Length: 247
Image 1: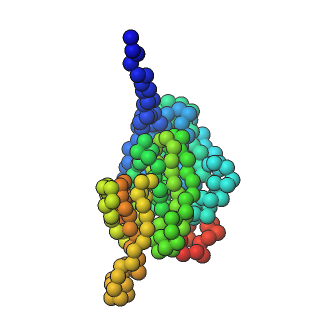
Image 2: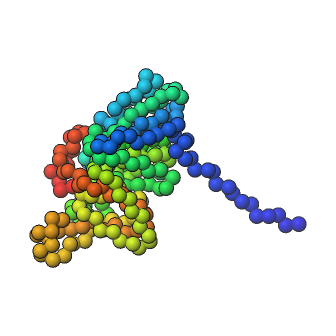
Image 3: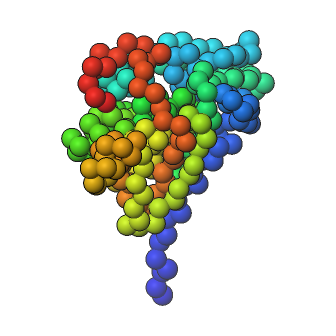
């Protein structure tokens, strides 16, 4: 008598309810995220992103991933340390925001890692890892608008992203190409490739208002655009030792 082949049932992937009891984006001009994290779940926030919290919430300045990753984050234009926030009861509430005009969006890491351009990452909820990634080509680093260094967020949980103006979400099919004006790229999923192309033509280059290059995104995957260009001002979150570079 033959035995049926053994099967392995994959473990269910935790949804948002595994990390938070509730979350809601509020506001119009400068949106905030009101969330009720589950007890013991870590919420990693950028410095200055913690607006208010109930008495049961504990927080501390911490180095996610140790000093090496913290130095990499500093090189990408973000702060050396992050706020590690944790609820100690089942009734705690936290309000976080970017302290800048614009919209907030959440990304479930169940859909895969996401790469955020400078200033787009606000918080990570759950078992989240934030690492610095380098642009895949020198041209993309210097002229693509995302900078030499970007942040790759992976793990399990939720990511909170900020964009100037409004968000526009594009889902690219395999091989589909989208060209984005410099500064309007907020984030993209890990399956999307990133490069630059020239705008072509002297008149378009000199008088078109878009500079010499456009950022080219190639699917498959998601691209998150911001309708206002992110200002290349000195970081309000901390000192950037590479601020003199064209990133």
